[in-house]
Image (cartoon, rainbow, N blue to C red; front, top):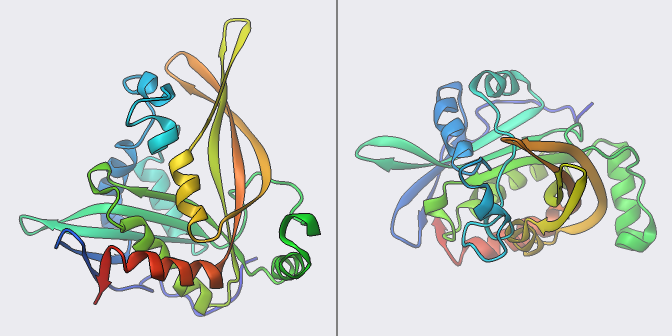
Length: 264
């Protein structure tokens, strides 16, 4: 069970930012009516048969190592079901185009660890040190740890602080509600099964790893995930599981977003 607090789905009604390109964005709670645009955003980052070779490349600008990508994209019905669950929180970053709202960023957090496939969460001192290990294990007992499930930014808006801004808003709000740590997993493509052979790939989502390390992420575990299939090709997938101390992460995120945006 997550922490108990007075929950309001409209916990963020519309925080405004002015990004470095001079464009205003609004970060707010996602609504059911946003689902079609959220699905389109996720599909723009999905790994498909059309872009698979580019994603597996070591040099392509949109490779998995440089840009990441989702093997599975939730459909509209699934997202609607998730939004009805009070353990899920969704934020969107919204721009305007010809008077219409355009969703350019998306963040989903869950108030438990159900999305992370790790059986034992008890950490050893050698990973974090005595103080942080004790703090995390106590937070686990008190259910003060949540999962950062998915974050996506429309490809044309990469590199201008959208992800930092939307993550800061979510984490800062959850910190105010008593949460102390975030856990998230970053995928790695271990390899590909070809007939009777296994072709080793070892492709981490380097861009995401570099991103989260800027605000203090520490790798605490490794997990093996179910194989993923793209077209007729099957891949062995794993994940590095990272831990974020919210107090430190919020401080660093605030510093990072000042390089891109001014909150209003």
